[in-house]
Amino acid sequence: MRDLHIEIWSDIACPWCYIGKRRFAAALEQFEHRDHVRVTWRSFELQPDAEPSTAHPGLTEAQLLSERKGMPLDQVQQMFAHVTGIAASVGLAYDFDRVVPANTFDAHRLVHVAAGLGGAAAAADVVERLMSAHFEHGRVVDDPEVLVTVAAEAGLDADAVRAALDSDAGAGAVRADEAEAAALGIQGVPFFVADRRLGLSGAQPVEVFAQLLDQAWRDANPPLAIPTVAGAADAEACGPDGC
Image 1 (tube, rainbow, N blue to C red):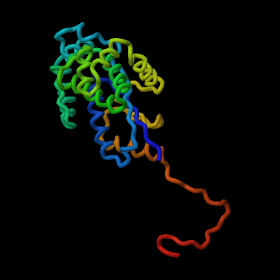
Image 2: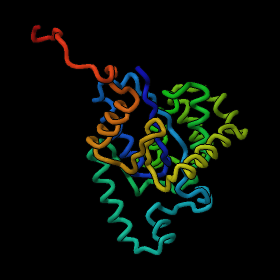
Image 3: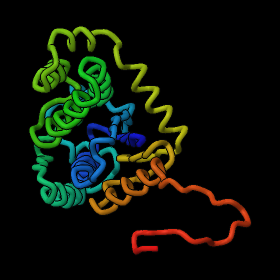
């Protein structure tokens, strides 16, 4: 039996990524081979040139998006209300009035630092906490102290995390993830890749994620088929129904 590897490209500041994360988790929880599925979180910046939060103090996510896209503010707010309703359906409490626009590069670095310090489970926990911090609690995810606090809440050593973030730890891994995304043709997130053979884009329904897992598992663990001798005719044999 071969384990299944799922890679998930996402951005901390992507509302559909958090929704997709919850839906995928629900599908994985129902999957009979879930103990043989390995999940790796990959970095993707929707706005790699985004200014840090300190560049626009007091500006809301809706105001910033309205200015950037040239959209009426009420249209942006309606869009956010729609996303908030869908997030609520999977148990998430988005509060776009509190969301602080931020550059997510260091948050992505933190995910890789967490993986180095505590493995895949720690990285997944940090992803969850970062997304919740950003979308549900209005915490500033490009503030180094917020990042250290999030890591500590996930059980990581605060001093080790602070030292890592003070260096360029994780930067190369973030850029490598983004280069791989480009090589794979990934242009939007969330994007799910199973064993580098199957891809799935977007915050799909739970049923679609379940189909991804089933198909990928069958591909990774095909049923044993023993070829028969060419030219052999049927001969007497016994089976479960008798002889």
